[in-house]
Image (cartoon, rainbow, N blue to C red; front, side):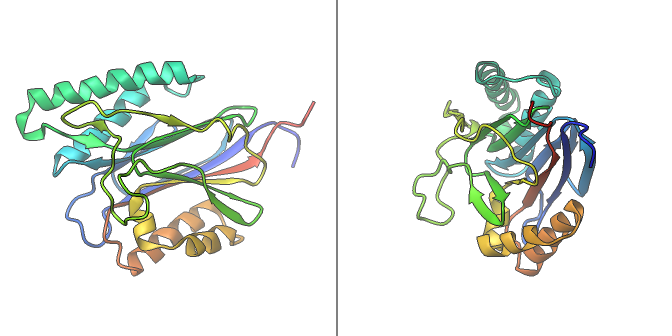
Length: 249
């Protein structure tokens, strides 16, 4: 491959799963928001990807996820980011969710988690999360969880989340992970709602990501295996493959 600079491939999907009547998840892949099906892009010079898992009852959760991702889409639009800028935007969007709930009493308390990743033209990354949606890194055959869940008890399955966008009170506290500063070539980043890990083990996910197949094939295999395992919750996944980074000067 010629030294043409950074190249990222992306593939994402969101699915109701096997048990839930509605999908409260939403994903943002570059500039496209999805509430169903899948979407992929190749040869991107930078990328932004977000997974939002709505909570707080139907249909309020899906509204919260949609409002949040639409706000991110309109406010950031692929531009350079900083923690200060993101905190300002997120604070404004959190207040927008409160206002929406007050205007529509049937949606009062609507809330959502968020996990997001930015990668720029040099491979520098910005990683963040709120709640229990997760980011993982598959590098050199090893799968590592990058984010920490904001839950009451990390050792207890389905423990209540302690940080989120919206709700009835302001519990927003965004976590950033500056220790993960740069991507490496052939990295695969995985962003997901907690529905994926309710269906598939870490070893199952790692095995799929290790296969020598396209990114979309890996994503489709994750979904197929999760559905075959019962998929008790909505499932959303975004995969980002670092195909090439700029040569070191």
